[in-house]
Length: 277
Image (cartoon, rainbow, N blue to C red; front, side, top):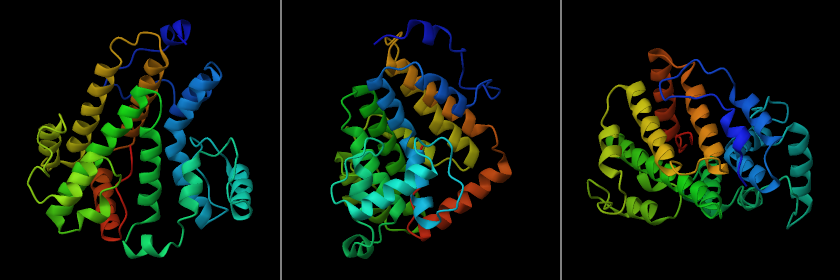
């Protein structure tokens, strides 16, 4: 389905824009009213990462505030978790199937013994599900992000003496190579086109500059992979992903950038993965 009027009405944005007029939350609500049912499901998948966080938050504290960007609210989670406790193969249109797979692994001895955190386990299932999506643009986007995150994570693990096998997630070709390689390039030469760029980014000492370079790489990927998608759902999805990047940069400064890094490093020590983007 093509969205001529919708896309034509979206404000132009550039990578350096920090004064965006529409919030991601407002944009999501506006778009969901105009998308076909099938395309709305694709948009929901993009925002499912907020459901991941909300699911874990709700399991830990039912009274906690949830991120409003998630597709499901507190009442949804209360009902769904109650059903998960009662029904072995839950069929609920609100719930993506990987959530049930994750719920069934909670307290699993194998997962616990391998030192895999709930965050990592859920993120891994999310990526695997998303990469199987029939929409090639979205499937490729998730694999691209997974590969970048895993290379950066493995590089940080080497630098700080952590076991990369516990923190690299997923089971695609690149994840497997990283987990089993001691080579400087993780055995990825000729496999991942952006390898050299990502390795250079990993060496950047300025934390905010490094994050900006990561987002610049992702922005360029979105531009390249939607260049000929003039009025398609792919163009809409890419626009949302760009707005998400711009909104993420609004509150950042050198001081809280340093704090973010400290929290990430502490998280790695506790077996927690970098936040997925």
